[in-house]
Length: 137
Image 1 (cartoon, rainbow, N blue to C red):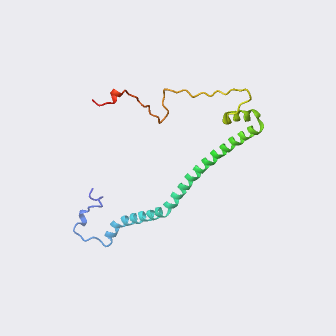
Image 2 (cartoon, helix red, strand yellow):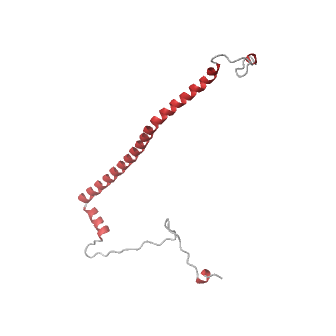
Image 3 (spheres, helix red, strand yellow):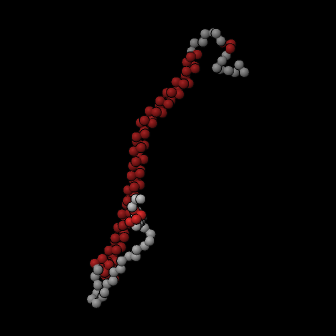
């Protein structure tokens, strides 16, 4: 087993190291450090451009979503505009709902919405206690 050992060779113990032996030991470490330095330089040069590309891709997706929403909104408005131009019943319904217009002789009833037991989101139920309960003993 000692014959295969590169770390400790008892035959050369005490003898001066051969010329260039130090470089043979250090050489792989130097090459590894130079390689790591080259990778670090490449990363330092290209990382900002990659990050900017990612940011532009996210911005493009956001703007595409906005364009899709606006196109849908435009289609809805064009459809409503067409109905207002062509359908007299739509005009009558909208004028009755928004302007509170009625035909002669009609009576308009307005009802308040039902009060429910459930609270709306973000609305807390206020507990009203008796005066005796709120006083300290």
